[in-house]
Length: 326
Image (cartoon, rainbow, N blue to C red; front, side, top):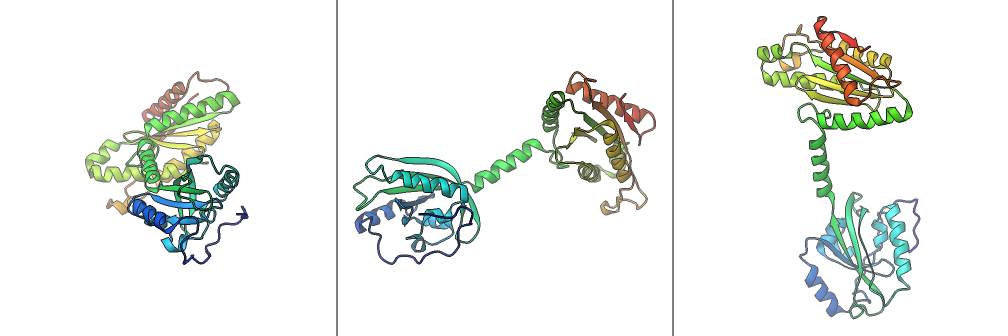
């Protein structure tokens, strides 16, 4: 049963056995096959060494092999390194418990399929009654594919945390992230800055070119903002309407101002010919910056309010401006 944990399981498998396995008699095997033939879960039986004695069609499909080829192979060859070690030691420990019912799982595992693809699945192992085993312990295993669940979960998480139009974080994610970084700032006495960004005269843009092109404009500005973040710890979000927000943990005012200037230049030079507008058409943004350092603001909400006040000042001063809260 030994296997090198530093090596990925080899795709070369031993030849399948032609004879029926000796651990299960033919009548019992036929009954087992009939019971589990059409179950929409992977069901297979292994012996105490982890060798396949039986596999239903779904198990073969999930493992990327055929039923006959699986017989005689070892389940450990299909498991990821960490899972392989865990199940190897589990099977070894079970060799001394031949008369006790034993079960493990369900546990999430990563499977290396025979076709070199990977599969995330739940694996559950339980000992079979002694009247089924002829010579040794046998364990029935149920393999449940988690791929679709993971896909759906990730899709729901994305829907819940992002703005569907721009792909940036949504307002809820912004607020949660700000609170988290605020606490870090307070505990470590490091700066945290925010930038609020508003597209100038966006209502006139929509009135002149229509909401479809307005949405395209929002997406183009959002793309520039996302590309301007200095690290993955920072967050860009759609704050509402044509307004965006950036959280910059561990960034002082000067850093925030440099990022805002970069955004201003990129937006000022952003072409719109790709959405059918004149080649000389341009837009601008107004930006407000606030920075928390040395307990300047009492709460994260106060920090956002300071950035909003700075944004309002940038707009009243003529727009296409960057204003920094005192």
